Image 1 (cartoon, one colour):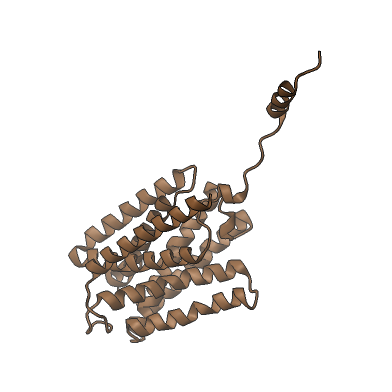
Image 2: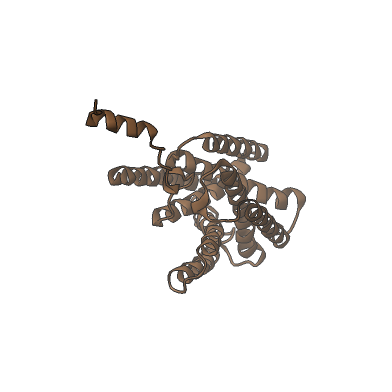
Length: 266
C-alpha cells in the first residue's frame, strides 16, 4: 500500500535534523544599535552617581551593595537560557555601580593616583582581551553565543567600567579640567571610532570596544557635572541621589521602549 501524503510528511519530519539556530537567536547580548549606545551611556552615568551617593552615606554600604548587586545580577544573566533586555541591562547597571566603586576604592583607600590606576586598568583590560582572544579566537560582540564567551564578555565589561572611571577622574580632577570640559573631551573622542568605522572602514571589533570604553568617562562626567556642587569640578549641584533616580527611570523607560519595538518587529 502506498503511504498517504500525510504519512510521508510526518515520516520525513521525524527524520529531518532540527535546523541550527542562527547566532542572532543564540545571542547573549543585545543588537548594537543607537538605542544600545543610549542605554549604555545612561547606565554609566547612573553607576557613577549611585556609587558616589552610597559612598557619601557609608563606604561599607556602597561596597556591599555594589558587590552583592553585581554578583546577583550577573548570576541571573549568565544562568538564563534566553536573552532578556531587562535582565541584561540590570546586569550592566550593577556592573557600572560596582566598577565605579572598585576603581574609586583603589584611589581613596590605598591613595593610588588616578594616573597610576588608569595605567593599571588599561593593563587589566588588555589582559582580559588577550586571554579571551587566545581562548575563543575572536573578541566580537556578535560571537557571544555561549556561556564561556559571555563570562569573558562580562569580565571585559567590568574592566572597562573601572578603566573608564579612572580615566574620567584623571581628566576631571588630576588634570583639573572639571566635569563638563571632560564630557566635551570624551564626546569628541568617541566620534573617532564612529567615523573610523562608518567612513574609513576600520576594524569593527576595535571600534566597538574603543567606543565602549569611552562611554564610561563620558557618561560619568555628565552625571558628575549634573550632581556635584559648583565648587567640586564645576558641577550644577543637583545631587547624586536625584541624578541616580532620574537615570534609573530613564533606563527603565528606554529598555521598555526598545523591548516594545522589538516585539512589534517580530
